[in-house]
Length: 237
Image (tube, rainbow, N blue to C red):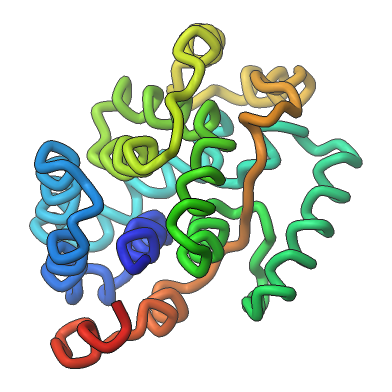
């Protein structure tokens, strides 16, 4: 499912490579027809925003959201386990799953990084992909709602992922999590408090995940670029 790979790529740290291939990314999403017209439009708006803004501005937005705001962290197990021992064991287990699927992590990647998890899901049969997205639905939903409050176009990626999931997330649990932390950039005192507190979600069937920080170029290779090669797209979809 190349659509999942595209959504994964959009959640990696922005580089010039992103801005160069955004039109091709949209072509893949449109050809696979895995998203509704509404979801496609919102992802398209994200791509248009990334294309139209100076790269440094896009990078600054990304860092403000996903690096400086703990409740928007893209390391899914961190949202579930915090920095506990359980997170470490969960990542070891997930790493083994990746290896069994033939997916090797690059230097600096961690198993619970959302883009890497999505890349793994893209190798599975569609039904398994949709089920696994449903498993992390509450975490995806909470991050997506917080991004909406920040008026970020990145929320479109989370809406698209939830649309693909085989079941709806627990809206009440998401509402409570967002009420507890709306996703704003915390000051230093708030950061200290957040890392000491228990995270919003318990370890339930709605909270499994993935991680690492692959470079955009690595992600592009895994999507089977050059995306501009239409023949390659047809052979790999």
